[in-house]
Length: 171
Length: 139
Image 1 (cartoon, rainbow over the protein chains, first blue to last red):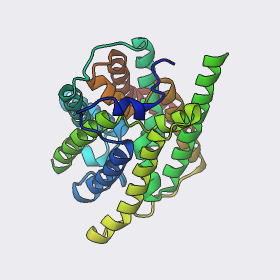
Image 2 (cartoon, each protein chain N blue to C red; image 1 turned 180 degrees about the horizontal axis):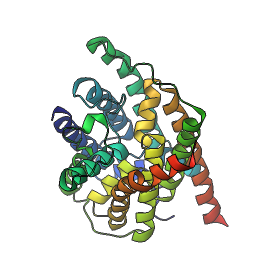
Image 3 (cartoon, rainbow over the protein chains, first blue to last red; image 1 turned 180 degrees about the vertical axis):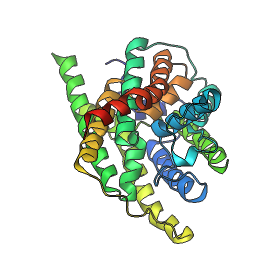
Image 4 (tube, helix red, strand yellow; image 1 turned 135 degrees about the horizontal axis):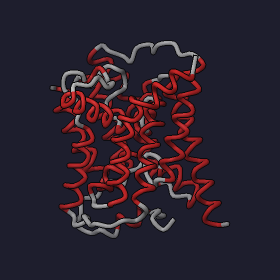
């Protein structure tokens, strides 16, 4: 529980001098970029595929394994010739942000094994639903019924997960 | 190749902004429920609104709209609900959505690096075991 940032806005205002970006600015920019990626930069098909941490990670991993090992693991049509590189970009961008503001710090807030299992589960559930939390919202914004259903399921999962966290913390 | 370069550039932008803003796509609902903090949930709404407005605008420019998506049977709907639910529930337990975990991993959080190892390994596991298993179990 102690790793949950209870007041992120307050935590940000303390870092004087650093570039300040609010969640609303980040959300707006990423929403527009996700749409333009699909429309202008060939990150399609499938539709509404501009940003997805799970599917793009899957494409990158499976494409690399296919190229190295001659296997035929599934990749999205957008990544058949050359894979999408979103995960690498996000890691580089976040590293840039952390390094330029002195926020890079090695630490281990929770059990690495638990985190490994969580990652494995989230990827499997995300590929089952056809998108991580970002793409489920992107598909909802595109008006896809199945995306809306998945997003509703995600909201229900978040609510139940939070109830469980609170119950565990207060029992 | 266009897609690869575009997603790399967009990824760098999203990673930088995500690191600066601490954006998380599941944390908003969690923070709102736990401490009535609306900082992250406003980002979630901003993403949805801007994408919802951008889709038709971009469609006017390039003449492409997200077309009618293929019909879906009951099994797909149930699997999508289950998948979405799992993404939300486990992401809350893992303390952040996949984007946030990428950002934390780049900030030196070792458990998030372990999360990413499971994440990328999970992609292979899904296509080698989970999906064939589901196909064999379901009609």
